[in-house]
Image (cartoon, rainbow, N blue to C red):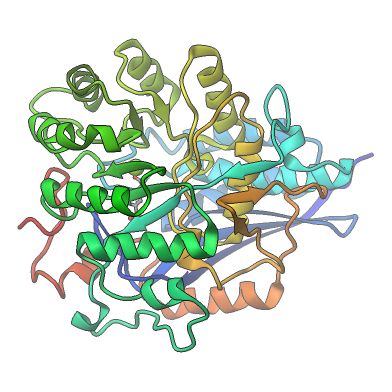
Length: 441
Ligand SMILES: O=C([O-])C(=O)C[C@H](O)[C@@H](O)C(=O)[O-]
Ligand SMILES: [Mg+2]
């Protein structure tokens, strides 16, 4: 008999973050996540990490009675029941922010991760070996260097982290203002020195498009061999996207969400048109976020690289997208949000189980590196993460660190991400507009 789950613990947590800019505004000095911890009667613990919100905490609570008392091999049964219970809350939409506002799919992923962690431990197998049709496909997963324009923390009275004792250039630059092409190239150089990235992505949707294109030129000059992409999260109109990216298309490997919903056309329609007009490959974490949208995106030939983040596709769902990509001549990739080290492990196992050639995965880890809630977070070396070979997710919770992160969460007066708050210090009265870069007001 497999072990039984005896206890489910829902732990909302927070960690520190820099003033990272994007279409949704500027990151607060903290990021907020939710950790799910399941204990079984053999003494093992399984963990999952997802974004947090009141809806997500409530959704997890709704599933408690399905989980406590279940056996760790009943993964699929518990997940089907959880989906059913959550579906009664009604339909949900991703929304137009840069981050996904759905509840149910995130809740299911937290449960899935913690259950697979326990199931893997009971079987003596790593999660990557259990996922998808084929299990582990690789032992190393490539990550990209995810760069952001950075607001000046000194223009706010918010408690942004400060580097007091830098160990290297990355520590020196990551919490300071970076608003110019040179500053972006410096970020890339410092990140390369620490992590060895071969690919870089710049988050756009902040400055006028042409200025962001200049940042790509600076990145290309610093790293002529690197695969580069720019992601304005659909902020630009189709004409603007073509105008901005056409002159630098030779420098980009793909364009991520260059345009989106506009004037009666869906984001899939404008992206298809963009692809036709520029010949550039496209990636998205905004317009192919479930199977129906993915089907339409494929029919329209709107997307080459669906960024199937396991947090909003589920782990098995993200691998299923990877399997489809491999069959259909597309390329799988993963999006990310700010995260702790449990999510880093989840994304690594998922990427390891996607067959064929995949693109380097996004991770915000470089902005959080140094913080942790497990005893030994995975590390990025030569641009790669090594896929754990130990049973389950291969991470061990650090109780003290988890409680520290929970205490920080409790000190905050917010329970979910809000990028408009810090923007008030740069532009009083600032509010989100999905069609206007954050600093174009
Ligand atoms: O690829 C993306 O669209 C993201 O990583 C979305 C995130 O919300 C990003 O914009 C951020 O962290 O500010
Ligand atoms: Mg994106």
